[in-house]
Length: 76
Figure 1 (cartoon, one colour):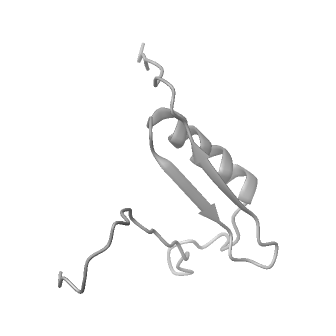
Figure 2 (figure 1 turned 45 degrees about the vertical axis):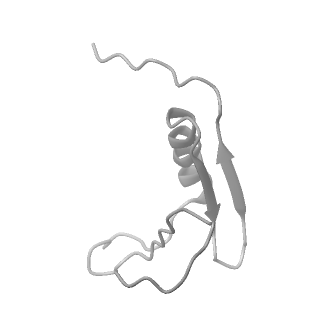
């Protein structure tokens, strides 16, 4: 990785575009289903901000952030 300058911004951007060779059944995903999962991830990762942007024509977007204590997960 090459340093190209200085910034005070941090973070990671992840873009997802499904590959038709892998996703045979559909290339369309339900925003509400994905938003629910992203909300859960933000809840389980204290201090993590997740910005979800749907670049399809509907143009939905949301920001998820939880600053409380993460719950204890038990596996029985």
